[in-house]
Length: 127
Image (cartoon, rainbow, N blue to C red):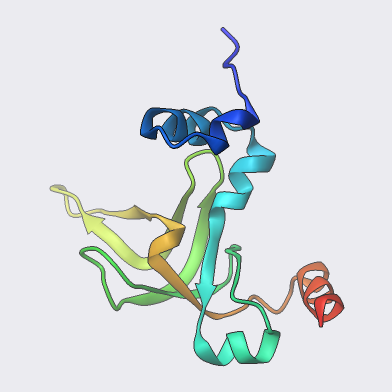
C-alpha cells in the first residue's frame, strides 16, 4: 500500500499530523530533517547557523546518555533521520559494540568534511 503524503500537514498544529508528516515524507523532504547547528567558530566563519550533517563531519553530542562525546559521523540514515557516530556505541551482552542512533537535533557540528567540494562551493556562493 502506498503511503499518502500532503504538504498541508506541515501547517497543522495537531501533533498527530506533524508525526504523520515526518513519517510519510518522501526522502527529498526527510533530508531537510538532518540539519544540525554549527559551533560558534564555524558559524562565524561560514555565516550560516545550521547545515545538513554529512558522513565525515566531526560532531559533538549535546543531549542524551552520550552527552559531550565527540566523534566522526560514520553513517547517516535519511529514512530514519538518524546519525551513527564513531565512539557512540552500546555494548551488547556478547561483548560486541553496536552503533547507537542519534537524532541530528541533538548534535553540534564541530568540523566540516573538507572532501565535499560541492558543499563547500555552495557555502562560498551564499557569502
